[in-house]
Image 1 (cartoon, helix red, strand yellow):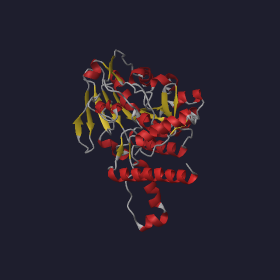
Image 2 (cartoon, one colour):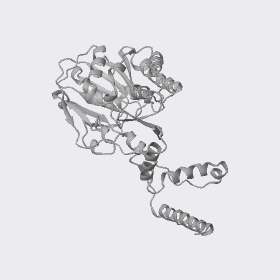
Image 3 (cartoon, one colour):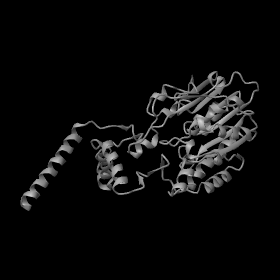
Image 4 (cartoon, helix red, strand yellow):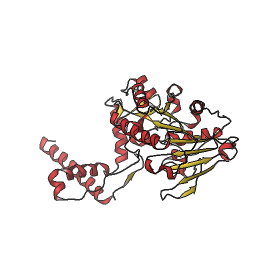
Length: 367
């Protein structure tokens, strides 16, 4: 076979490939959401003169074609395999694996984001909490134990925590870092495992002058848990198992929450319907709720806790229930700080701000 014929065959095969992909792109409907990556996908951008002149249209169209490419998830998995097995890369899509975990590279401290969080926290303190006992604690990302131990770049967590604690001087800081190891976090997700953090709850409560009981029954969710990193990593991963703790106090608790219309509705500590949806971790306190109240009708003493939290607080909040008659769980990503008085009673309550390093280092969601 001469070189000219080889060239013709090569061009023909490539043309057939391009034509096939083009037909698939036109025939297949656009997808709005990626379940594996847990994000919205780019849609076909509108053509305007301004976008064409500025170059914005070409950037948006490139994102659109990348997100809507046929068999994208399968191709991402192949890319991951080649990156590790052929090219020897240690990370993929900004993620790395170590000790059976998938985690995200995050080496830089973003102090302006810390300042934004501190400004919001100090506003809440000065507006509502000057007569309360107020505490602050930080949940380190699992990179705190994974990255440095395995030679990956990691931000200076000690410096981060020290800086953040200094930015909220009216709150008593409670350190929990020494209690946490890699096994306290899910392998495929950012969050900690409820069954492994009873010691964390005990320390936090003890610093607030409260003793907790530990007579829990461990329950196992009967659906696999593919955490947020599983889809982003795009490689074959073993799913996690979610376990959750119950006892008489938790089982008898009365739970209510404000829905997205501002109406108070009955809720639950463990929403097993949520466990069947895209993110089973949202079974804890039904996930993204602005204000949740948990009442302990069997409490012998009237003592209340207001817990300001991100998603890490969803799974630890029930563990405080044996020490309090009422717990109000507040997520200021979903309610503006200026409106808190209408929904939360701070009178005489202990107040704990419990936030992860990942949110504090990217805090624009705090309102």
